[in-house]
Image 1: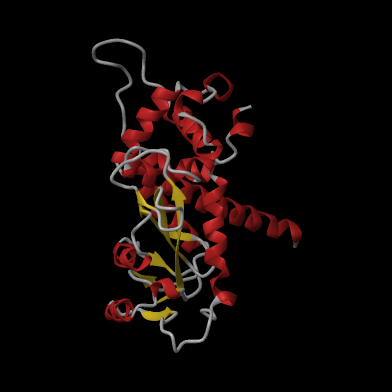
Image 2: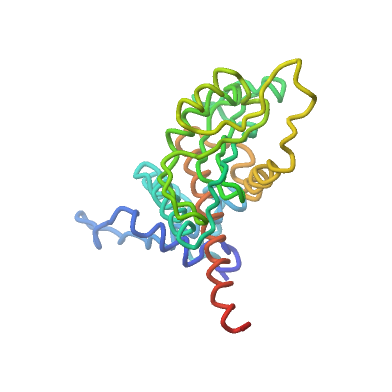
Length: 285
């Protein structure tokens, strides 16, 4: 029953998360109930992320997981410990070993969402009548696999987040050339990123700039649609997780943590599909 309600809880995802989850004692020194199983708590967190319910509305009995309050505390603690980021990097490394990470060019894009609550991580949205909102910024590889995801206020310009995204870029192995990269070889983006100073900054990092330049003398349209559709598809993947279609979190680190967990799910599903295909190849032959 719980597997049907939480299809995201795969072996690949749990194998990436488990080594980074802080260990707990097997008993409480001052007595009381023993700590709940971490895997069961993850079940509740994944259900909330996918279905978008409140913490207290998690169906604990149907899922076989602890209460919503316990799931919330585990999520808070694991977010503070950087579990999601470490697991995301581990999954990207495994995808590189499988030859699925294509770094011939890295794409950048962003999308705004409305915030239901306030906080320092929100801002007046220029695309939603200045209502409070947040923005997700994403770097993906040439096939759309999310490499970096960061969140911020909705009134932050796209170009102002690029340097933070580049600094957060993990050490990755190109699945095609087997070359290790600490920065993207080339960066592609629309005209929201095509400021002269940003193009110069990207080139200063030693990255080939494929950012569409701005200017009235430039023809209408970026001309990158045939290559940028992969990042547009990646941005649509986030909408499959209802909890982050809007920002319900009071703290920015929790909204960020949910996005990183969603990135882990996307990467784990890619890895699971690739391994399934590899196992099926000898049978087909």
